[in-house]
Image (cartoon, rainbow, N blue to C red):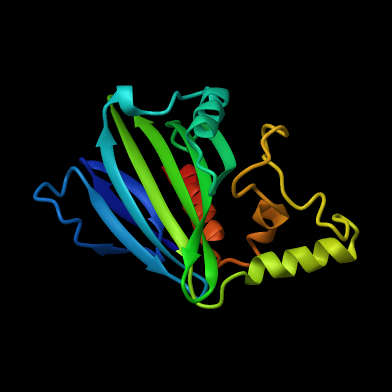
Length: 209
């Protein structure tokens, strides 16, 4: 059974997970922007896709430049989760980054948000996809489970050393650093988590376009 849907953006076709449904983009030119939303038991997400100028795209094939650029733009409440690049199954160049942030919450104190930016090159057109996903419902479930698991298996000490680090630069110690619960290995156990939703979107696009 397929769990994907095909969408059209600027006369180009993308395949995304079927958890997304279309919403009004609020623009008079639907060919320039397509907007979709998704909601699971642990997260909500908004996906937007649009064509962009080549000058606005991330540098295809140069992950290091994307990492350096992301690091330069991070605030004290953000952290870089991953940068990836490659070619889709149809041979289109793609590059992406995932950034997470800690957002204040009057009820819970804080919750996590994850933001994907992904560029895909189709001959003369580049499509940019963004997904903004955040925790919903009971927050921190994935983090608590993985933290307890890491303690039991002595991957972190009683002071929490070893829990979080920037994946590309160990000298970066501020911000919402990537932690062990952000590892892709936990996506299958927590498929409704916002980070899992984002990675499922990337995987779908890479496998189908």
